[in-house]
Structure formats: structure tokens, C-alpha cells
Length: 576
Image 1 (cartoon, rainbow, N blue to C red):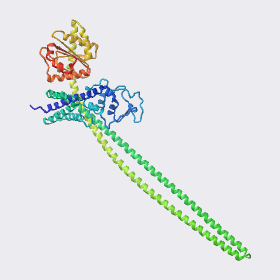
Image 2 (tube, helix red, strand yellow; image 1 turned 135 degrees about the vertical axis):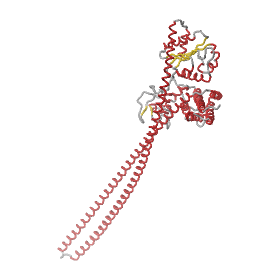
Image 3 (cartoon, rainbow, N blue to C red; image 1 turned 180 degrees about the vertical axis):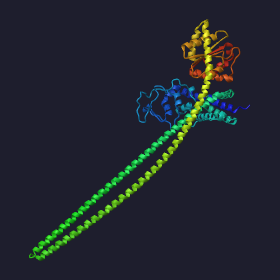
Image 4 (cartoon, rainbow, N blue to C red; image 1 turned 90 degrees about the horizontal axis):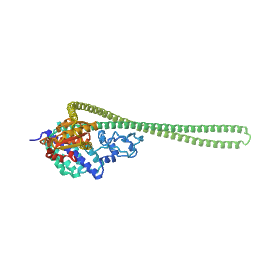
């Protein structure tokens, strides 16, 4: 019988979720073991760089003491950063202005990694971030690094499958690609054979649609957050473009001011030249006055000569003629020199004026052309910015509406589920308390030192197994343990279950609870299904690791012998 498209989807997701996460954890543990370090120490050594994988456009108080290379785009989101670092602790870095100095008391050696961080708390994306950015176990261009990237790409492709279905043809292709990626990664930490066994085990597992829906919904939410973050980055780049346009306009204003200053300088030169011409005209007037004075002197001489006509008339006339000729020659030479100087000055003034006018005209043309180009370029940028802003605002509005619609639907579903589960869970918790009260009311129980030892084991290990033959007091002892544990730890509630499946339906991950499974594997015959019950044991193990769920199991000796294989094979029972 051919599997349905829905089954194909589940098989692919099972390969990625179960084996992909485990392969990523194994890679990280393998690297840490080689370095002789813990995950917490590893994160503390790289905590400054990890902080700026999320806040890539900001400075923090540690940047004043040591700078780090920040990526061009955001690598981690705030929720992912909260898994690795203690974002609410007192040592978490403070943000600084661009050129500001820290006012806090933080130092470079303060640690702010999460205290209880463990590799099994990381998803594929966080593991890839740590392995790619801070280790050399997956070098650039290697087959293993490419395989890790292809594995995440296949995860995203499966999550976006229409209606959560994959055709038989695509299933064979997807399955081959996913298995190849996982085997390439397993080869790095030396567990290729174990990975092949897990592939065979995944083929036998039954269909569990709730796991697929939960993972698909989680990944889609992360991608919506990535889209909104991309829009924010786009808005920031648009603002930077607006600042650049304002800077260019400022440059244009400075260029215009310089041109006006040059024009003022040319005016000053022209005024200086005009003053020189004025001085030259004054000199010419003085020369002409000197000529007039000479002529007056000649006339006076002639008057004197007329009075002395009786004395040496001929010699006097010759002297007068000689003097007059010399004066005329001198006046002629002086006039020629004065005229040449005036003509030369006029030519120099005309040439200077022409050069000034030509330079002014060329400078004005260049300034006008540059201003026109800057105005046109700025107008185009402003138009593009307005168009991009409108598109961005439309995208943000549609994204918000879709997010609000999805959140409302999820809230309604969660409220309906919560009402159903709360009523049944409250009834079972009440019945368990009634049974404990009946046990105490009898007053026939004789406490032994084993009770206190069991309570200490439950506090430290979170899992306690009571075994023994029928009628040896397993039930009474377990009720007494629940009673005394509840007195010491009033924040924990107690509930008694007789079926593993009730744990999946009734127990919430966040509440503090002590769960008593009485004869969970059967009373006379073994009651355990490998196909379905192993998944419930997996979830039970995860809750125990988290620390808010304590578990007490009672198993009869005869039943324990028949289900010894599950007690030996599953990690939840190791060391118990």
C-alpha cells in the first residue's frame, strides 16, 4: 500500500526534526569536547560577537574597550539571542550613541551567558549560527558545511509544502537529499552507522500530525519575523539615502557661496583698476597745467624783449627763437609720451575688463549647469525614496494585518483547547488529592527511611521508579511520597495517571507538577506499544530535563522483567 502525501510529509519532517537536531547537537558537543570546554564557557568566550549578530547596527558599552566585526545584515533575532544570553541580567550590555562613552559600570570581563544553557535547547538555526561563525569544524567550501546549509533549505521547503503534503515522486527526492546531508554530518563526529539505524527506525514510526503542525507553525512565525526585520532595514536604508540627498544639497549651497565670493573678488579688482586710471588722468591734467605755465613764461619773456629792443636786438631774437624751438620740441616729446601712456593704459584696462567678463560668464555657466544636475539628481532620488516608502508602508500594513489575523485564530484555538484540558486536568488533580487524603485518614502507614531517601532522589533526579511484587506497598509508599514532597515544595501539584496517553493530553510544559504513573506498563500483562508509547516517553524525557516535571513510576517485578528492553534502551531510565 502506497503511503499518502500526508504520510510522506510526516516522514520527511521526522527525519529533519529528530535526526537533524540531534546531528547538530552532536557536532557542537564534538567540537566542545575537542576544545575541552562547556557550552556556557564557549558562549561566554564569544558573547560580545554573539550580541552584535543581533544588534549589528548599534554600539554597546563593551565596544568602547574592544571592537568586533559586525555583519552587514542581522543574523540573530531578539528571541534567539534570549536563548544564548541572559538579556534581562544586570551584566547585559548597554547601548551607546555613535561617539558616546559608557556611563555604566560594566567591564569587558563581565559574563552574561545563560547559566543553564544546554545543546539540546538549541534549534537547527542557532546551531548553524554557532558552528559557522565561531568554530572551524565546518570550513568554508567543505562538503559538511554545504550539507548543513542544504538540510536547513530542505526543512524550509518541506514546511512550505502545500497543505502539508508531499507527492510520492518528490518524497523519494527529498528523502534521498535529507539522508545524504545527515550522513555527511554524522561522518564528522563518527556516527554514520548509528545514523543509518535511525533512518530505518523513522520508517517504522506512526503518523503524528500534531508534531508536524507545531513545527511548521513555528518556522513560519520565524520567517514572518525575518520579513518584518527586512522591512525595517529597508526603511533605515531609505532614511540614510535621504540624509545623503540633504548632504548633496548642502554641498551645492557651499559651491554657490564660493562662486559669489569669486564675483566679489573680480569686482574689487575692477575697482582697483579704475582707481589707477583715475590717477593717470590726474597726472595728464598736471602735465597740461605745466605746459600752460610754460607758455605764460614765454609770453612774459616776449614782453621783456620788446622793452629791450635797443639792446642787442638780433642776439635777443636768436636766443628767443632757440629757446622757443627747444620748448616746442620738449613739449612735443612730452605730449607724445603722455598720449602713448594713456593709450597703453586704455588697452590694458580694456583687456582686463574683457578677461574679467569672460571668466565671470564661464564661471556662471559652470555653476548653473552643476546646480541643474544636482537638482535633477536630487529630485530623482527623492522620487524613488517616496515610491519605496509607499511600497514599504503597504507591505508593513499587509504584514501586520496577516499577523493579527493569524494571532487571533491561534488565540481562539488555544482558548478552546485550554478549556477542555483544564477541566479534565483539574478533575484528575482533585481525585489524586482525595486519594492522598484517604491514605492519610487511614493512619495505618508506617514510615521507613526509604521514604525520605526516595524524596531526595526525586528532588535531584526528577524521576523515581518503585518496583516490587504485588501487595508490597508500592501504592501506599508513592502516595506518602507525593504528600511529603508537596509539603516541602508547595509550588508543585500532584496528579495520578494510569495511562501514558493522558500525559500528552493533560500535562502542560510550563506548570510545576509531580506525576505518579501507577503500574504504567500493566498489572498482569505488559501494556506497552513501541510505535506510539516511545514518542510519549520522549516528551516525558524532555519535560524532566526542563526541570518543572517530577515523575514517580510504580512497576511490578513480573512486568519489569518483560519490558526490560525499554528500561535499558531509552535514555530516560539510564542510571535510575
